[in-house]
Image (cartoon, rainbow over all chains, first blue to last red; front, side):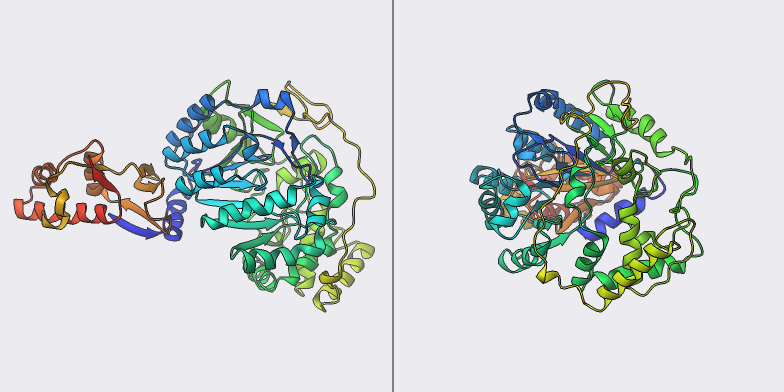
Length: 427
Length: 100
């Protein structure tokens, strides 16, 4: 028998799978229902959404699904939502997944964690629990979640998990509503709870095509100012981009749309059993209920993964992709097309590079590089960031002035063979 | 088998606190309940270890393990006993086996 650290073991698994396709990581949205109504959320539905609840996979279906996933060699499972504990039967689903030997990560807002749930998790320990905090203070937290009392419930949930020494991490999504408390949340996480903290300002439009979350998305300057306020990030960005620039060309696959692990080592399953290449991507899906996980992985997701590019964009020859969160799923949510660059992400990546003092090589028709007005504005922002002129500590919250119109019904596009608004198709 | 103490004559089986999986052609043991080590370490088996682990699945006594090692690998009784003791001791210390 050999004993290895988890890091060494994980590295070994990925090395052995290198160059092969196998669904070692599967993300499962058990529900989109949630007790919170966060302004920035891309997928939440009300707890009382009966149609959504009826469409969710049953515990019996989850047992069959998890058996099939295990048979294909999956090791890491992420359960997410919505809010996973919005399902009263979630612990049954979770316990079955534990008996299959998966390494399980739970994403939760912690507002529904009770002593019973915390005790259960302490007995059937997850691999990781990540809780999203929405503010350091009650006022800010509930300004974003729009639910009175949710702050206290979240703090209670965090304490219940932490007291039982569960493998807890805290994180936040910086928005215009809570940007001034990001580093106070960091302090709380690290000093009061003794756990890791991270943040990511990527806010997407909703999967029902509503643009409303964008109303609270930070500006690129604010997002990068937060980055550079964290002393760990600039050197890490520098390391990543130096490594990227040292290569003769881009790592991007010139022929295919997807370039991540989706469809190679990972995939996602939504609450009704629709398989897709990742948790954010919903335009092309496969119905597990009508088939099998094996078929969905081996055939449908392979075809999706090998989808050829249909257009050239400024991303193709970009040499700062290591600083950018652009991916086809983000393109789908932002504009409805997987190959369309997301301007917000493009600006964030360029601003990071400029703030690091990096000259971005020419890479096509990019407004950040070539348009004199945009480039001048970004250069000025970068200088302010580098010089520490942006005092994140003095930021004040900003509620959205305009609620952008919802383009689709709250329950989503609905089943069917097509959706004219965003050109979705469902297998 | 002195190292196992009271368990020496007892039938042993895999602990109900662990689950074994084959991932990337390697047998691994995943703890699932409190009482077993956290995932700071992962246990994997080589080829012979995988065979022995599969024998333990439904329960066997250490003498059966010794016999298997002798017949499968042509070991002497002494060597097979020493190998079985070492293997079971390791499993026992990590909480991976329990009395059947």
